[in-house]
Length: 213
Length: 213
Image 1 (cartoon, rainbow over the protein chains, first blue to last red):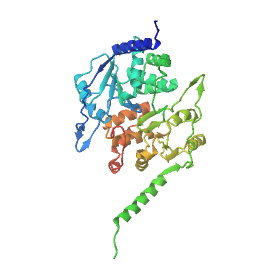
Image 2 (image 1 turned 45 degrees about the horizontal axis):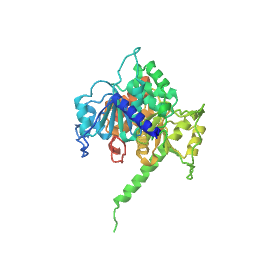
Image 3 (image 1 turned 90 degrees about the horizontal axis):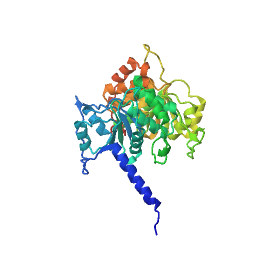
Image 4 (image 1 turned 120 degrees about the vertical axis):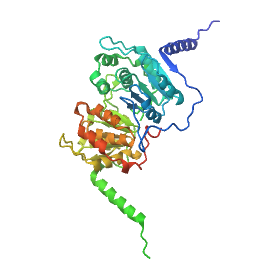
């Protein structure tokens, strides 16, 4: 007797979806044995330690940060965040110095190759933002830093979609987007956030200050 | 035999300091029996709940938020933060609706009456910022929301002084200040943050992401 097993179909479908997501997201796995001994000392000026957060750095929510592209001057600061992962939203390969930093600090990289087009030729891939949101919402990846090049457009869109999931009204989503994009704010990015459909993500567990506390 | 008791002097000095701080900071104590039962439902548009964060709202660090003046439209959002206290940096009395909101949600108000002068007549009282910082650093007050009128200058200065304690370099402190102040950024505020002496506060325990994690 042939039994149709719907759960098997479900698993298969899930596997296919995961495979698709994997194609969209390049990850760098770090060695499983990670050195968690005290970190190298940050830059010292005189007798004072000085920390240099990356450009456009901010806390988004519990365990979620955003910024522009971090360079080696920012590594000491980033170490204080004890990151578990980074969501990187550009197609360009991650620089060697940054990859080394991730490896020596046990940070996993999730790369989503979103092009940084200028208006009016903007086409933000909704599926990639959706996959990035899933990584972002997974607390096993926290603390996580989201960054692109300048922390304005691609990062702003991903954070904006998160805010929609957090039930923020659109004007507040745009207010935050504009604070980081400043003179470079794009209507097309804001339209993308407005039209982005969150209904398929609503089942995901969320543990953010705005919903949990 | 007369014994000079230095610890007694210390206690007396501490009491005097506390008295002085009390004069600087007006607080509204809430009833000790606080209703922590489920909060009233937020505004519902259609079948969707919509949350409206206050103007210039942002997360500063774990358990610390900043914004402009919240009005009744923002109360549902603020309830999701489960605030324990608010640091209010203006001399004007707190509006009745806001005071009611605090009382019914068990939120303690710390008011520091800093005038909102315009340049070039700016004179930020360093002692008040110092007292506000002590309230801000006390985790028993967390989660805490800092706000003034527009969340730009007074709030920006207090957060900037916190960042100095967190060992941020000045250019990053100013970068953050300017993100919120935008076209209204003041050189005098930035000079205030630069000159603000944090040495007397360094002994205070801090449990922020940038230092603890």
